[in-house]
Length: 266
Image (tube, rainbow, N blue to C red):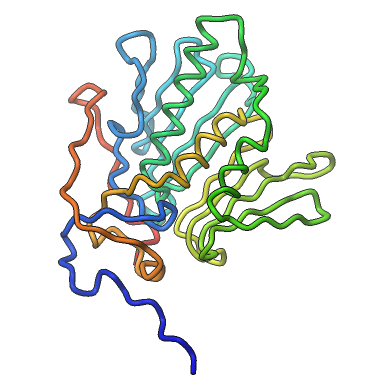
C-alpha cells in the first residue's frame, strides 16, 4: 500500500491569515516592493529614475552599476528584477543578474544588500570586487551540501544541487570554455514549471551568488499570507502561525512601489 500524500497544512486556514513558512524556495514571492528590495543611499549619490512603461531604475554614483524593476502586465508572471554592471557608464555590459519577480522578496533583498556592501567597499578602497571577485565557487554551494542538498555532476561542465524534497535547485556551469548560458541558475518549484528562476551571468561577482544561496537556505522563516503561497508545492512547507512583520522604509515616501507579483502561485 502506498503511503498517504503529505497533508496540506493550509486546508483549515483563512486565505488572509499570515503564517511563517520554510523552506524559503517554496514560500512564494511575498511583498516585493521597492522599499523592501532597495536600501540604496539615494541621499548620497545614488539616483532613482522612473523609466518607460513603469520601469524603475536605481543607478550608482559612478553610473556603471544599476538595478531595475521591469513590470510586464501583459504577461502574467513576466515581471523581472535585473542587476547590471557596465564596463563604462551606460556602456557595454560586464555582467548581469536577473530574477523573476516571483522570487521570494527576502532573497532579492539580501542580494541587493550584499551588492551595496560590495559597491561601498570598492568605493572606499582600491579593491574591485564588482569586476574581479576573488570569492571561490565552493562558497556558493558548500552551504547547500551542509543543509542536505544533493549533488550531481555532468560531463557538459555543469553541476546541479537539488533541495531535499527536489523542488528547488542551483545549477553551476563551472566549465565556461565554448559554452553559453548563465554561470549560476537557481529555481524553486517543479523544474518543468518553476515558481521562480534566477540567473547570474558569467562575470557576476561570486559573492552575490553566495549571498543568494545563503538566503535561500536560511532557517529564518518567511512571513506570508496563505493566499500568497503557491498551491502545488505547499504540502512540502513547514508552517507556524505568526503576526505580519513591519515593513522597513528606506526610500522617499513618493517613490512608487512595485506591484505585488501574482506570478505563478496557484
